[in-house]
Length: 427
Image 1 (cartoon, rainbow, N blue to C red):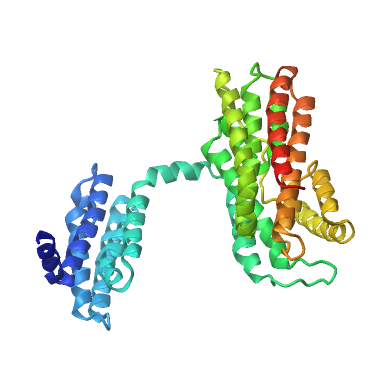
Image 2: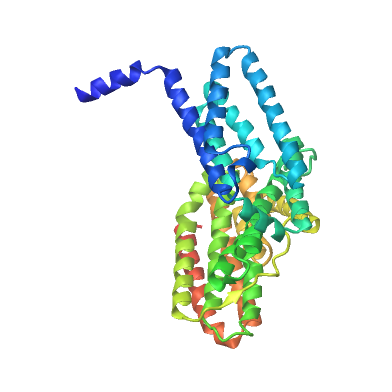
């Protein structure tokens, strides 16, 4: 009964009343944030804070509902408000010789809350309010962050936007050469997918975990390249006394290899991804558990700056990856035609000693009518098993003698589990 009465009361409340309350609250929030941000300044030094922002929001609401079709009163009010703001800004600039423009932009955004509320979904308005509050609050953090960014990082970001947002949509999704069944779009999509994961890892390593522990280094480095990370950490074992932390980082890098390939599978073919889950999930779990075991076994704290991680968007890197992708596409086609499933398995075993990403991404994009999903899954597991073996060899050759036993134990466990999973596939 009480619920019914509450619902009836709510239904009888005019929508304009609810919108007015929301506009006032949102405008007041932005004003309060401004007051907190500039609490050391006198009020006469500011264009306005909490009350001013709330009143500007109310003004925008009133002028909008007067004529919501033509927007004329609202636009006139916007011009008048902008003129007043301009006069205040130039006066402040003349007296203080410098003046920020952020508060003025926030005030003008506050004025537009009402039409956004009436014409756009409410989630969009909330997103705008949250965005304004966050951007106003993180001024100092943005300033500190901007000092850390080099000009080359902006160029790198521009490259990423070009390859992902400009070049990719323009490429045709049909093969242009008769001798290879790969479209330019799929070819470039493979480069974008791998570069995206590597780029995220690169940014995290450079700006978030500059002096990371070995375990974190293994995780982030594994997202970029588990083989490269293994080589770097194995060499580092010769310069420190830890025989467990280094092994933990290397095993974590291998765990990230499985995770990276699983993410790529979901990007290119969800059916393959779901088929890989029963095989990759156990491998991820065993690798992580082994990594944690060795990490907690050694109580020493070692930090490491992963300085060898190159920019993942370098042209030479993309070019090599693209060439390998095309080469493996043709080789896979020929091997499948003349040697069948066994040929693909042998090729997977051989590819494991090189960069497996171009080969596996080619499998993920191959039509399942030509290569079945079980064959793709088994070939992927074989390639990762072979790659685990070659990483163990790298670590044994390049690493210190004191980590050899732990390396053999860790990678042997991963390889044994991989072989058991392969046998369950009934190859």
